[in-house]
Length: 265
Image (tube, rainbow, N blue to C red; front, side, top):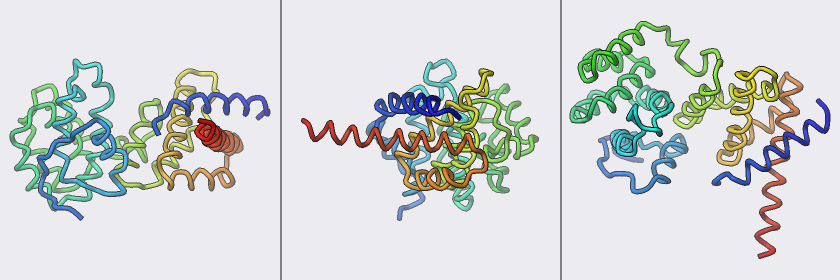
């Protein structure tokens, strides 16, 4: 890869990075999230300090702010992103699912649809039984989707094993990471950044989304930073190694520039 191309990547990353913002009971906690930042922090750093008891509150927050309304501009991929995240939470708290489900009975169909998809993603016997028992909580159309989902091979649904064919799947990988801290999700993102700069639009979008989101997570998560530093040397793909080098250099430069700017004021 030419030096000028690396410089271009660094410039793009730098300009984008400047815009970045940088033991509990398992009964469901009814205390609402006070702010958007509190909700986002619970989601982004869940693996560091798990609080699964806030699942119901999180669902209520998403509904109240339009994230679960299919007619809302905020809807987008939020339900499927939430389902990947909650699927991991449910999988590691299978013993509590029956008690939680009893407390979910008053929730509406939009929340229940996310819950039921999440139970499928958990892929545990108790989760699958609760899914089957509560199909009536959603309308006929969503019920048919869920019945089909139950018959689908989990390997085609799991972000770790499904083929990455659209840029939206990068968000699903990070959702799995946020829930678990499992660096296999971050590694799969790294494995897509070689598509940055490709000629065809779908590949370019995947590569760009992977690279930009990776930069964000390097800043926010020390474990991802360490992984990128390691893969900068060890990754089998030369282009990936060079892109990691450019990304990490851009992040360091951005931090140094901010430090100088703060000292000058």
